[in-house]
Length: 155
Image (cartoon, rainbow, N blue to C red; front, side, top):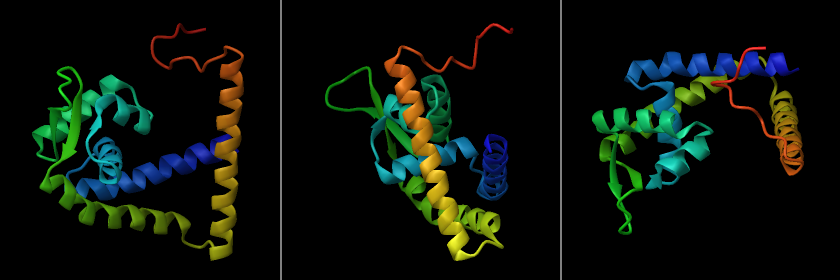
């Protein structure tokens, strides 16, 4: 099951990447744009947490997004250390261009599935995600954490 879900996720990502490149947007930029369209003005840490990516990864992506004119970063509330990302008009306009591409990728992936099959799949995947989140929380309560993927010694 895990292999199938991983391969499906990979296929979704690649289908979306194919479409995003027509607008010169990377998959990483898409992730942050989606978050900012929902809640503008988040800090780098908040963005990295919501994207489930490391802060250095977020930092690199945000610098590039600022260079492209999608966002501006500035300090808020007198905090000189923490910068928040705010969408520019250009970053806001991308929503109308990019969201249809994501819907197209979803439609491609779901073609051939009936509405009922799609609902069953959505329900099953949601339950699997909840179960796995609970498993991780239970492990954390026992002091067991998921090891980092970088810098671990090879066995």
